[in-house]
Amino acid sequence: MNTAEASREAYREMATFLRQNPQALNMKPDELAACTGLPEEVVREVLQGAKTKRPSNSATATKTKGGATRFARGILGLFDRLTGRPLLFIGLSTALMILAIALIGSLSSGTGGRGVEIEVAQGLLILVVVVLQMATYYRHARARNALYGGLLLWLMTTPIVILQLVLSRDRPEELGLPLLVSAMVMAFFVLSLIYAGIGVACSIIGGYVQVRRADLVKERLTRQQLLERLFQIEERLRSGPASPTRTGSIFERRWAKRVRENPFPYALVAGLAISLLQVLGIGGVQALLGETSSNSLVYGFGGLVIGLITAVVQIALCFLAGRPWRAVAVSLVFTAVSVPATFIPLGAFGMKWVVANWPEGWITALAYSLVLGLVAGLGALIEERAALEARLNRDDPAALLAEMIEIQRRLTPSTAMVCVMVVDAAKSSMMKAEADPLEAEWTFRAYQKFIEDIATRFGGRIHSTAGDGAVAYFDDCTRAFAAARTIQTEVGDFNVKVSRLKSPFRLRIGLHCGTIAGELEKVEFTEVIDIAAHVESHSQVGGILVTDPVSSHLEGEALAELKDTVDGFKVFMSLNPTLGP
Image (cartoon, rainbow, N blue to C red; front, side, top):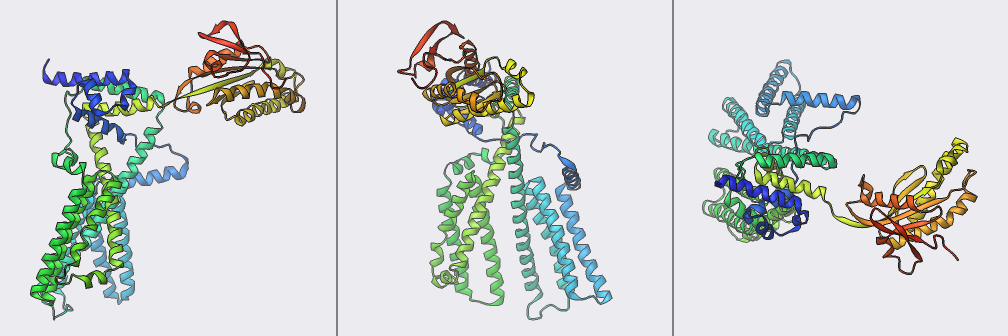
C-alpha cells in the first residue's frame, strides 16, 4: 500500500471508529490520535473544524411569502445582476457621478443658479452613489472589493482635483502649487481610506449575515436530512483525495499559526514599537526642524504613513486572533501599550499632548480599537469558514471528517433518564358514540386538561395527547407514580363535576423509564414511549402498571409482579392505585 492510500485508509478508520464509538467525540486529541492512528496535529485540526459551523450552498434559500416579499426579491435579483461584477459597477458609478456633478455645476453656472442649491444637489448625488456602492459591498461580502474600490476612487478623483488646481485662478497664492497639490493628494487619499474602511465593514457585516443565515438553515435540517448528509460525506471520504488539500488561506501558513496561537505578545511588542517610532520619528523631526507651513505638510505626510502602518499591523493582528472577542482584546492591548510612549517630551508629544487629548482623544482611541477589533474578528471568522467550505468542496479528508463529526454530534445529543406515563380511557369510542358530538368534544378536551394539570402539578410535561389519552414524562419515577395515583383518585370527581357524558371515564395507566437522547418533546419516536404504551395496554381498568426499572425507584409501595412480561420487562401492578385508605 502506497503512502497516499495509507493516508486515505487512516481517515476512513477514524470515520469508522467515530461512527462505532460516539463517546470518543469527547476524547482529548492525543487520546483520539492514539486510537485512530492519525497524527495528533491532524486530529486537532479536524476537531477544530468540527467546532466551526460552515455556510452551505442553500444559505439564501428562503420561502417566498406574499407579494411584498416577491417584489423585494425581484429588486434584489435586479441589483445582483447589475452589480454582478462589483469593481466594474463601482468604476462606472463613480465615473457617472463625477460627470453628473460636473454637468450640474456647468448648467447651474450657465443659468445663474444659486450655489447652495448646487451643493445640495451634488451632495445628494454623492450620497446616493455611495449608498449603492456600500450596498454592493454588503451584498457581495468581499472585503477586497472595498479595498480595490477605495484605490479606484482615489485614482479617478485625484487627477481631476489636480487638474482643477492647475487651471484654477482662485487658489491661494501664499501656498505654492506643489505644496497645494501634495496637500490635496493626501486629503483625497485619506478620504479614499475612510471610504475603503467603511466598505470593508459593510462587506464583513454582509458576510457575517450570510453565515448566520446559513447556520440557521443548517440548524433546521431534519434528522433524516442529517443522516443523508452523513452518508454522502462518508461516500466522499472513501473516494476523495488521500491527503489534506490547501486553499491558500492565510490561516494555513506556519507563521500565521504561531501568531494565532497566542497573539497577545505580538500585539504588545508591535504596539510599543510603533508608538515609539511615531514619537521618536515625528517628534524628533519636529524638535529639529521646528514648525513651518512646509514642515507641517512633511509632518502630516509622515504621520499619515505611520498611521497607515499602525492600522495595517493592528488589523493584521486582530485578524489573526481568529475570534471576535480575542480580536477585540488584542486591539485593546495594542492601543494600551502605545500610551506610555506619548509621555516622552519630544516635539509635540509629552504631558501637554496627553492632557490636551484627555479624555476625548482617549475615548475616541478606545472606541476605534473596539470597532476595529470587532470588524477584524468577524472578518477572520468569515475567512476561516470560507476556507473550510472551499476545502469541503474539494473533498479534503480533514474537512469532510470535521463535517461528519459535527453531524454526528447533532445525531447523538446528550442523554437523559425520563419516566413516561401513558394514560388511556377504556371504551372511549362507545362513550363518544352514545353522546352528543359537541358535548363529547368539550368533555374530552376537559379530560385532557385534567390530565395535563395533574402532570404539571407533579413536575411533569405533556409529550402528546390523543382523544382518549395522553403521554406525559417526568424526571423522577416517584413523582410520575404519584401523578398516576392522583389521576386515578380524582377521575371520580371529574366524572361527577365536569364530564357531560353518560358513561364515566375509567382509566388505564402504564409507566416505564429509560434513557433518551436530547429533549423528549422534540423526539418523534423513542422506545421508552413505545414500551410505556404497551404496559398501559396490559393494565386493568382503574389500575396502574409499572415496569421493573420503575419499580426499583418505588420503595415502600405495594406492588405485585405479574406472570407475563411486556417487551422483555417484568411488570408490576400497584395494589393501591388510588390515594387514601
